[in-house]
Structures are given as C-alpha cells and as structure tokens.
Length: 341
Image: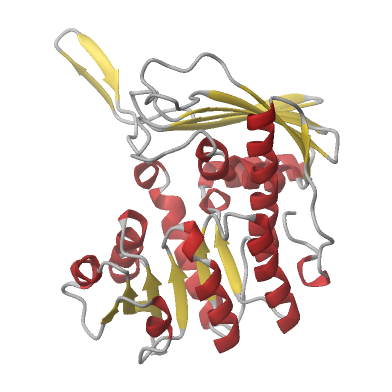
C-alpha cells in the first residue's frame, strides 16, 4: 500500500481542529504529521490521541517536521502569507483556507512567488466548489440549456457574529465565499461593487452594519446581489438563484429533518458552516489529498485567492464611501490562464 501523505496542519482553532479530525477519521490516503498553533496547549489538545504527531508553536517549524509532505493552513488570514511563501520555497503542496491573504497586495505577492516557480503548489479553500448543489448548478450553467446567465441572487446568513466582527468583515470574510462562487459559476470577473446599508438589525452588536446588500457587476454583463446578515438569530443559510435568459435555478433550500410533534411541525436549520458544508469540506480535502499524492494541483488557485481579496477590498471601499467602486486586478500570469473558470 502506498505511504500515507503526512500533513502539517497550521492552526488548531475551530477550523483547524475540524480539519485535523477530518484527516484522521474521514479522508483516506493521509495522516496528520504535525500541528502548529501559537497556543501550544490548544495544539496539543487538537493532536491528542494521534500517533506520530509533533506539536509546535511556530508554524514554520511544523513545515520542517519529520514526515511532512504537504501543508494545510487553517490559521487566521493575516497569518497565511509567510507559511505560504515558505511552502513554495520548500516545494510543499499546500491547501490554504480562505482568505488566502486578506489584503490584495500580500495576495499578489503570493501569486507572483508561485508564478515564479512555473508550477502550482497552492489550492485555496473555497469549499463551495465542492458542494454537491453548487456543482450541479455549475454544470447546468455551463451546459447552456437555460441560456445566458443574467443575474445571481445570493443569501448568506449566520446565527450570530463572533466577538470583534466588524462591518468590513461582512464583506471580506463572509461575502468572500460569494465572490469566489460568482466568479466560478459565471466564468466571469467581478468589475465593480456597490454596498447598500439598511438600518441595522436590533440583533446586531452596537456599531455593526448588519445586514448589508452587496451588488457586483461582471465583465460579462451579469449582476450579482448578496444579502449578508450575520446576526439573523435563527440559523445558517446559504442560497443562490441563477436567473438566465430561458429559466432559473435555485439551490440552498433548507431540506433538513422535519419534526412533527405536539400539534405542530418544525424543520431543522443548520447552525453553522461546518454543519451545512460538512460534505463539501470532506470532498475538498479528499480531492486535495488525492491530487497531491499523484503530483498534481487542482481546485481554486492562488489567482482565485488574489481576485477574491481584490474584490473584497473594493467592496469595503464601497461600504465606506457609499458609492460604486471599481475593482482593479493585476495582469493574470500565464500559470493561471484558466483560473476562476
């Protein structure tokens, strides 16, 4: 049997701990070889019970740990750039959670460093591309049976926002998923952003502009709107409707377990993204492991990560200014000729 792919997981928080569990219990062909987190106790807790795992406070030390052949970055976005560049220097394949790098300048440095290698090493964690419903919608739009896509109507709701969540983060953290999904579904770049701000919900923390309506224009003439509401109070909902010249298609309807009791009925609503997109995360990481073991890199690219950061930055400027804001992208390196398509 082929040797298991040894993975260093950087970040042992909510997302990182879930990926450690996934690599150990769900995904085939891989094992956790190292775990790194500035909170060493948290790293030790996440790695507890796993054989042959080294634990580190320094993420770069984890890259050099025995048995590491690939890296999964699940630390906060501002901490991504340095380990990504170090992975490139070491020739290590890497799956990096979004945002690849939050600021577009740093994200472009990552793109240029990888392009300088002449080969891809990074896959970026836009897991919606691995969701079964999103996959069916993508196939339908690509097939052309509904004609040209005219609009995407998107909804992104969370039960509540975590401490320290800012108005800008509704765009550069939450809506970043819709940014990538829209680029991927339509095969078009987003060229301008406008943000409308209704009166904040009574359930939003003081000073947080929640909800927001984010409008995107594309270079193919489509329009995308995103309702983002991160303190809706009742559940986690992600929906998307594509309106085309000859029909429409909608995904993300809640079809959880229906419970009937005491003269009434209720349908379960997922409470966070790890529940709603559990299967997508499993598919994403399995696909990354399979490709890495074959010496290939697939999935969303560093260019997709850069484009998402650049669009999100324009969105934050639109939020602050109240006006339509153009998106500026650097020239796309040849290495990423098909990225976002």
